[in-house]
Image (cartoon, rainbow, N blue to C red; front, side, top):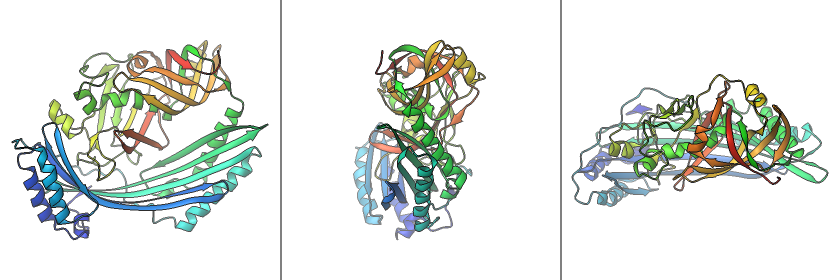
Length: 476
């Protein structure tokens, strides 16, 4: 992030005088509690190589602005894909209706930062279009040569470069350039008429070079193939209550959904979260410490500044089982007398910011995963999760395991398919009996949806043992 960057601003590039835009914003915010002018230009591309051919290649470019006026709990928002002084004035007139004659007190502006959590690489510029297509073709050929049971390969690349500027009434112009890339591989194998699929992906806030070296993409191929072959031998999962051991990394998505959303400041402030009004209470087993951290270098969910201009930070949410904090955007922080935590995020200029997670996880403990398995008489080892559903008001969840195994007499035995974990976040946290020494983040593939908006996120955790979870399956 830079203040008053010497490079031409997005406003100037569109022919808008920044001083005149600030004057319009100042007028709109007279008597308001908060607000900003958010300007964006984003370019993205995506390639899909499927069924032995380039199935799609797309390029998208968007630019526009959003102007927000906040008065109490009400926010007015005007946005347009045309960046011009006239459009900004029209948006300001509409957004200012939120004040309705109210005389507010302007909130303190975001604090400044000199930190920068990623470079300004342009994933669309390098490698060239033809090189990206050739890489996907090479991945396809490599995957098919790995095993004669490979029946289908799907490989994809996606990259974007998002430039944002936030103009505030005090004249500060906050700028951030955000690269983001992702590589995914899915492989379907077939044996005796039975087909199973495995997938793997990785990415982060950098150019493509980090993720498309031969060693990196071959790791994705091998992992996708390994999962698919495991599932070829999987039997129907038995249903019932049992102890569950979760593997590290991506399985933190359960915490993200079942617990994380309930700790976002807008939900807790409105009293619709299972964690509302419970600061200082024990909500998890001893040893459970959950954090959100948008300040990790290069991670998918990281941001130098959030979409309101607040620098991101590490926020402890649950410490040793005690609820100690929530994630706040500027509105939820102001209305609850707290400080913003850098969690104000929006999908694009056409959306208002709201409290959202960045990189969320649980700190590691000191128990080896092998000890968790050995201590389990009958249970389930879930190595990887797929999709899930959660009710924010009570934390009830249903998650599908894409790779899971029975645990019998302290040993991992048969792979199973059709396994689902059923429970609720607050209760599940109290069932944690062992915390692994193998903390890890997901490989950089997370996308979070909330109120119709999608943003990139990260999740992480160590291996965990939970007692007495309900496992749904297709066998008894």
